[in-house]
Amino acid sequence: MFSDFVDRFGAIGSTVILTFVSIIISVVCSILVRLVAGMPFTWPASMIAAIVPLLIAPPLVFSGASAVEELLETRSKLELIANFDTLTGVPSRAHFIHLAEEALMEAPEAEPVGLAIFDIDRFKLINDTYGHLVVDEALQLIARTVSVQLRESDIFGRFGGDEFILLMPNTSSNEIQSMCHLLLTHIQTLSVGIKDVRTRLSITMGVTSAVPAAVNLNDLIARADSALLHAKRQGGGRVRYI
Image 1 (tube, rainbow, N blue to C red):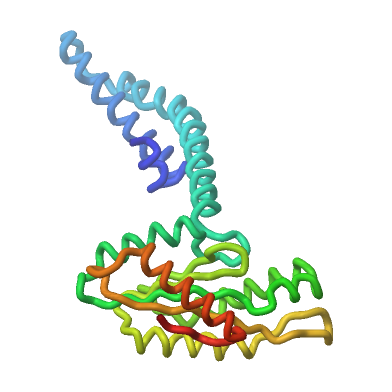
Image 2 (cartoon, rainbow, N blue to C red):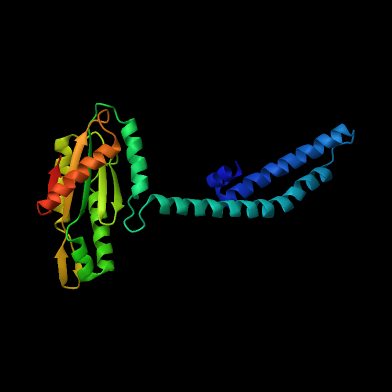
């Protein structure tokens, strides 16, 4: 209850509001006590009833609210770290699965969904040639390039290592294949390296689609993964649909 209050109004806002409320309660209680005791109303007594919480409440409330605010900020940061890949900023594997399963549950059973898995071609060679910093740059470039092309309803995440995964609700087989070819084209314009020594980026994509009534998320992932393996055996740098 208090944490929700602090989350909404902040430490300073909570201090102001709760101090004001405590003053009102103190004054009202003071008046009621005097009435019950048969004592007449006096302004000095009411002033004292207002001043006491005004002096005591702010430091106490602000101290507690500040501590709660710090805990809320820490929890928010931990949730961010747990749910999103710190390098690319896209959902982590676990968070992607959570979001994708929710999307499949909410999607109409007859509405097609598409799923694609892709990884970076020659990833180990890039790592061995240029090092981890350039590999990190490649992952970030690809994540940004894909993210700007997607709809709000699409779910895109890092699946592990150099592998990414994309779920597109309400998307036919032709539509997701067109999107994947577009993404491949955009990514093949990117390059990474050190100074003038650079290499073009490319990806290989395995793609599938189905209606939620016929498959679950694991089925879609397995089919897309199989398509990815076939595409890599054909040399990579392409989109393979199953």
